[in-house]
Length: 54
Length: 328
Image (cartoon, each protein chain N blue to C red):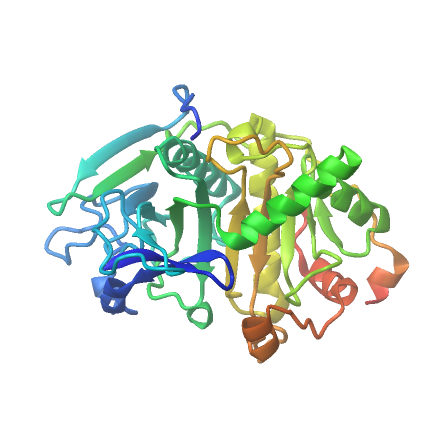
């Protein structure tokens, strides 16, 4: 069992119940969600020459 | 009818679920149960005209929270239990004609947040010991709906393959004091021949011990057990790494690559599993553009995989077609 510690997520959760009792959960994200984080390094491990030849 | 039957020879549960024989099978596009319901159109599983990501209980579940009593009584070495669990469908997008690889990094990041939500909520249910998140993509791996979607099985037990991985990690921790996946990753990074990409927080490799020709593991470099342990920037790194790997797959043979994708996370059985290490494992069945690897005698009947390719060579092939960080 995992403790549910959510509560500050940047999305809304809406639940519905179908006629047969099954649930549906809609997740909606705002248009102003944070952009991608900058400055991701592209590669930090250089392939070896053998791998390049492969 | 659904029930768990104990396999005494393998010491594992078999889920017997006969109602799944009747599940929807490759319906015409206009009758897709995962598309939004539009005015005057087919009433799908999703009543709204649009959504970002949606989750619903599978109409044909292998397990359910209020399962029926088993059809048979346990007897002797034949044990049986109710198939108590949860089976969810995760609809990645309201668009029908697309794939996860074609989604933006931002949308893949949204999906990661939804996966995290479901891991935490389902894992908090009493009796749920493992939340297994996966995607089957492509008819060759058995999908019955083309609309991009994945599934979640919340099991009342830790599935056997994952239990073996966890047991290996536990033994390694007990004997060395270290995390097995951290040691594997350190060795892969030191060798580098099988590394496909690295970004700020994740490394993708075709592992030394790959069982499938293009099997990729996307592994967190920090020792963490589950999506819910990810820091915000780690979530973005994971989205970027996943996007690059999936686009690379599609560029490898020039068609949308089928695969089985699964997440490895900490069990939710209440035990201490601090040796668990988060990763995504992806198994495409293709060994060439036109040939599939089948699980035949050795794999299915003996459990011994034969990989007729070198991970070092396959990693070089796949690495050559991966998009760069700037191209995604």
